[in-house]
Image (cartoon, rainbow, N blue to C red; front, top):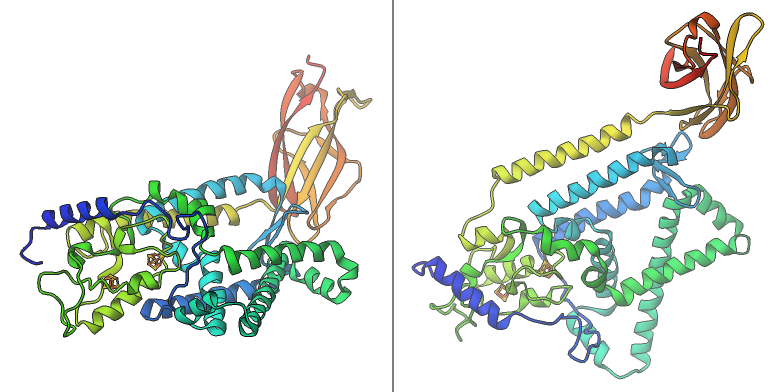
Length: 477
Ligand code: SF4
Ligand code: SF4
């Protein structure tokens, strides 16, 4: 291979792909039926790392709902009551703009991240992959055995053994789905409410219980039957790969320059001299949970789970060839037989990604604790007071996003005048709204226009928490 011109190899590879590249999905038969995939149990360095990462991931997922800050959950996404808590900070509908900016920033982050690092997220952090490959698939290997045992079980006619196996697997899958559904519910309504419902029993919470069974059944359907179809036909991120990836993106890739032309081993298990390093053993295909052959190039179905890297590395070790025939690499580097290393593109994108994350953090941290709206009371003009002053009636609406009651005071900032709050004190209860009318009284001499701009400072003790501008109506002379 060494003395063969790379451009010739690339051309041959292209011709090979043109002839053989599939025009169908591995999980759908020619008759349009589901081809059920039985991936071989992966084994190797990457699989061990992914197992470790997923244990941490699952530990965080199951522990977070129990963590509280000032009596409230650390995270809560209560769409029913429109109450959202991130890192212990309560977010309100008034903070929607932070959500909108956060969402946009997150989308830009995803796009940049994918351009550089491909689908690393899918393989290492996507909940679907973690639950499928690191929870349910492991249970399946434990209950049904590896690829051959699973195939045999599927092929065998229905008998007592098969029925028992299937019933046990369904029961275990449904139970695990039920546990997961409970924890997702805890992220929505809080763990305290979930535990209270468990204490009160099903009859007292029938509606919630029916929803819980609904979610459990969806999880069960996804992990028992639908599986990789989520990534292939449902997930929008997967379908966007075609426009997000380019030749420089780092993906799980087969080094066709080194591997082609592929060929079986000689009878004495040595490599054929006129062939590349791929011995066409299909080990990489057998472990693939989406049923593809990575040697056909980057494909929509590839979730970057790294199982094929481990499988091929094991084979390369056995035939005394360097590992990495399948590896994390860019299409461009493979074509030029180069190895990925830190370059300006990766460094530049990484800096932008870090800045985006910092921007999101700043948005969250600098969010106002108190939100104030001041409106002049509808239908009211102005009042001339007997002491020579003019008064306007306003209404203030305050939102306290913190977990403590806040006493606020108002001050006129840009001119002399008096503020008289009808309720005398402005105490905004924690995590609640408060509104009250108030008068602003200003000497008539200071009001020379029909509409005078005024600025009101809202204070908690000596600390100004917000400044609001409005107008003051007067006789206009
Ligand atoms: S595991 Fe490696 S050697 Fe075997 S078919 Fe796949 S790429 Fe070729
Ligand atoms: S091709 Fe490799 S990395 Fe991609 S899904 Fe299949 S086994 Fe995982």
